[in-house]
Length: 127
Image (cartoon, rainbow, N blue to C red):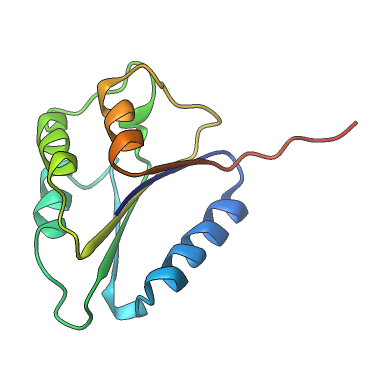
């Protein structure tokens, strides 16, 4: 399963990640974290294609996933499009974007919406 979590509330994002971990009963040792501002999308996708050594499922959390923002691209975006079209069923891939909005017109955003779950995690301040 593939997820895109976005929003400015880091607490809500962490809570949602905990829900996903609980839903799939993933052990801490089977969770890998990446930062897309440092790590290459290709290496993340290579990891997502391997099976977990410890559990039935593994989880990959990709922070700073700004490829879903307007004007932001990655040279390996076509690899992600291919992966989402035929993703590894034993890998839960979670993209985390800390912006309040994402570009819903981008091909990659539309594909992850079709092949996974997009969840907005912003709060509104009541007056």
